Length: 71
Image (cartoon, rainbow, N blue to C red):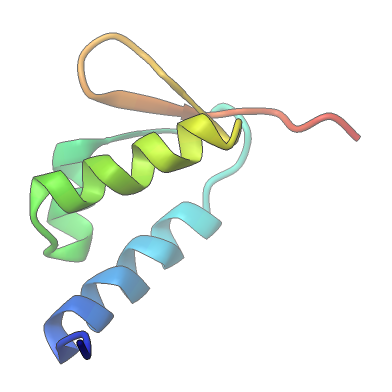
């Protein structure tokens, strides 16, 4: 199944937001939704995947913190 243009654009915007983050920056699901235009469950899934990969830490509520990565 091919992704729609809206989904592609939203994912591009979310990717830009996440790649622009540096260690210590925070993002919430509502902010990711506002920036990307994607549904909250999509944004939450991406942030949870990054948390499982060790790139983010989930704070209380729906905020996520960009981690420092070991060199």
